[in-house]
Image (cartoon, rainbow, N blue to C red; front, side, top):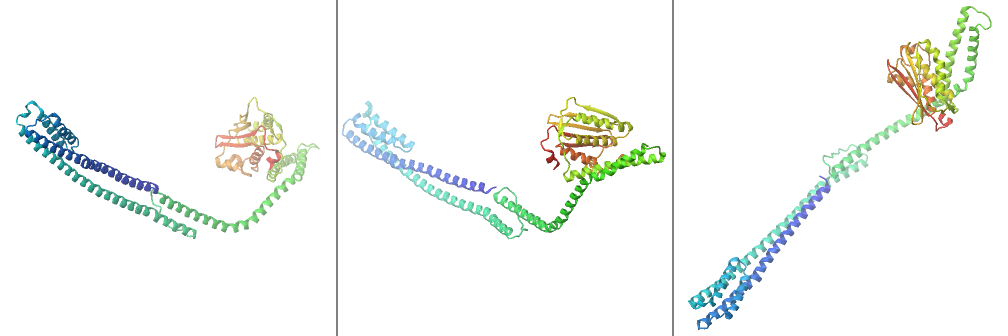
Length: 494
């Protein structure tokens, strides 16, 4: 129960008690007013007119006793006075009694009124006396009722006022017990937290009252402050280690950058002698300058094959170094991906036929040109197509699909029916120098840079490379390139 609800409940109870007291006083006031009216208005007037009617009737009876006739005119004042007395009667019995006496007096003027007139006059005289006594007794009874009502009203008013005061004191005490101790406890805890004591035992209790939520918030605050202090301490402790390792990290970064720049700069120096080795070994293997022993010709072919493999490895390493050094340049031009993929299929068809693989084309009829580097697009397609052929067993198939999406992208996908990869192997394959440990992979040479370089080239063009694979089913590599790239070549390289 919230404090607000408690206060509202106490106010409602006080209003109810005060309202009940007011209604009771109002009802008693009405009753007292009615009693006062009955006593000081009806009762007094009724007694007065009953006594006056008796007096006038005695005068009328005296005149009748000396032989004067009882006329209607002589009875009129007595009848009027009895009418007033009957109207001011405060009890039904008194009212009926006054009505009966009036009827009897009115009957005195009848033709047979002279018979037993004296007896009737005496009887009416006695009845009028009784009527006056009756009205006097009724007024006394109502006076007693008025005194009792006043006493009762005074008593219950005192009781109600006392109950209201007692209830107000109880409500004040309960509210004080519900509010002050938790707030005092909260102040103590807040002072302890401010002083650095973060191990205070805070019992918030159950419920949804403001004090419960206040203590709960203090507990959370103390926990947060303690966690902040722990984190600050951990940061302070690790700051020295971080500063100590910062120089080493910076030195390693400079060394790595120097390595990348060195390899990128040495591209010409590494490729020139290797091209000479490839050229002369091919010349010797073809016996262009004259016949050679078969063994020498075979050696020359081996030298040429090994040199070609070494050149491919150097090219991959140099490409990766250029990418890391930010020196890889993109020359934008309008590129027809359909023509690029067709050329790559033509180049790789001989290698596929040696492995008894089937190459399948699935090109959409209308594919827009893209803004990209044509040489890099061809490198991307050749890398992916070469991997698909390399890791597909004999008799399998490789599918190359090309289409344009509604989101301004041109997408091509290369799907093979090869060995496939697990999700963990996909992560390894996308890392630089990552190679999958499988029987087919071990039968082929390579540095494991093809996929990582391909993904970097795709991302430099603002595209995205997605690789989906399942062991024993095959692999699908999808490349999505925007038709018009928003970034410039320099920004993409950066």
